Length: 260
Image: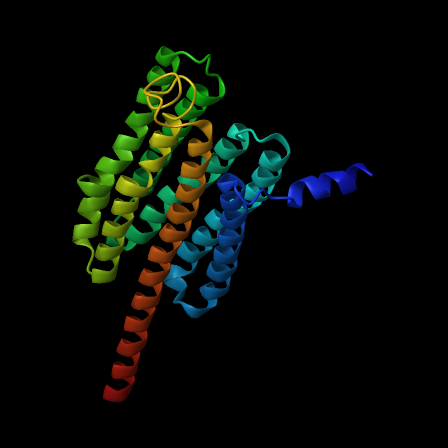
């Protein structure tokens, strides 16, 4: 009986509840993206298979977490803070790994990857402390929000001006150069959604205890839309690079075969 009641509660969606809608569509969109990236691994050169594998893992992990987050929200109507940060702790470092994989042919070293991962972990751990253990005070959210922002700014600087940008400039591939620039825009614009959501919580600058511009419902909407756009978008950029570079290599091989 409990399982039947649970199922009925989960599948019943209020037509006016935009948060529930984005939880469900976010889950399906990221699940579909994961299937797409895994299947497309077979159509690209071996040099890019790992990059597409990581893209599939990012969207696949997110889909699993959204499966549980949508049910949690349906039953409690509360923000699944812990589940969100578990998801981000796995997927955001993998998004940093994508930078390394794309730039490895241009000379990227593992130290570059680990610096990005460390910055992402700092960003996430500080954000979790600020959001999960909030006492509703502005001082607590601001302190941990500032620490979290330091990690974000390091990744942003690397993508636009630092090591990632410099390595991309050295790359002989226009597709990689354009792809890194696209990912840099995702970090600047797409990832900016997360601090906005953070500031919507109680004790945040934009939340009910601050300027009062955003509510907890807004925070969930911001996070749900941001997750789908950023994770699927990251993967599509990587996929585009892989397809273009594979096509270029195939054409070059054909020209060599004709010349021989």
